[in-house]
Length: 111
Image 1: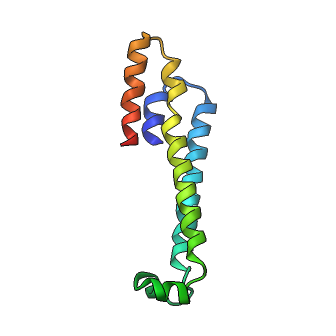
Image 2: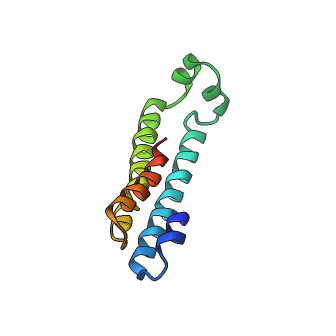
């Protein structure tokens, strides 16, 4: 997101910078939330999470929901971050071929 800010925020209004800072804030909150979620999923025995699946299922509070929530939210954040620069690239004053090329460079983030 800071890379996008460095590239696209030159001469743009405060709305664009606000959107970037809002996304950074959401990502920070997301990281902190899942950090503590995974830290306390097994209450006072975090080592059970790193042993066998049987101990995890026995001692940890339904970690499947935590995994699913993490996977879905991570996918949504990744898609949002990858799609974020596309309207900005297509608003630049360059040929359509170059716009497709620059969009393709940003699409390499899918790999």
